[in-house]
Length: 171
Image (cartoon, rainbow, N blue to C red; front, side, top):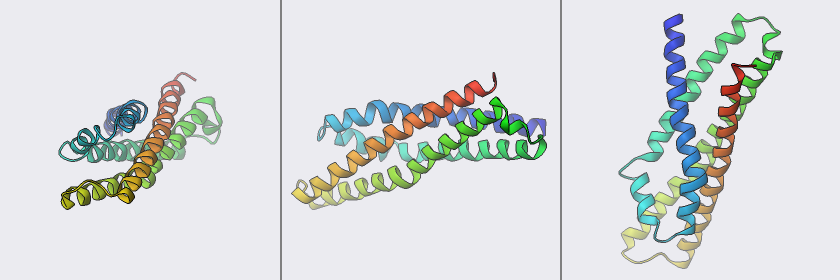
């Protein structure tokens, strides 16, 4: 059990750092900058999300962080007395986990579908050989704004979750 716990902790921390760090960087800096500098930023974002596969990388890190966190959290509930989850440490870990799950759900059900729609719309525009129509441009801008807002919310949630996880050990 000790080696499994070590592996779960390492996976959770490394994947969490990648997921939270990447989300904070993208949500608070890259996405707003890209939105403010469009259409010039379009090629940069297409390269970042296409050949560089940032969405796949971030999604994988998020899944690893969440699953390893749940694997560590579940046995704790079963092996500890009922008062532990009412302790400051237990409450703080629970709050951090709950907030991180909120960020995960935001990414999976808001950002990922909107980003996929942006990709499909961008491919359709490129395939047409012309610039975007007024309707396509309006759709792109609405989707980009949605992803930017969702990324910022996810970044703030993960920042709070990281603070909770880091502080829980000392409570």
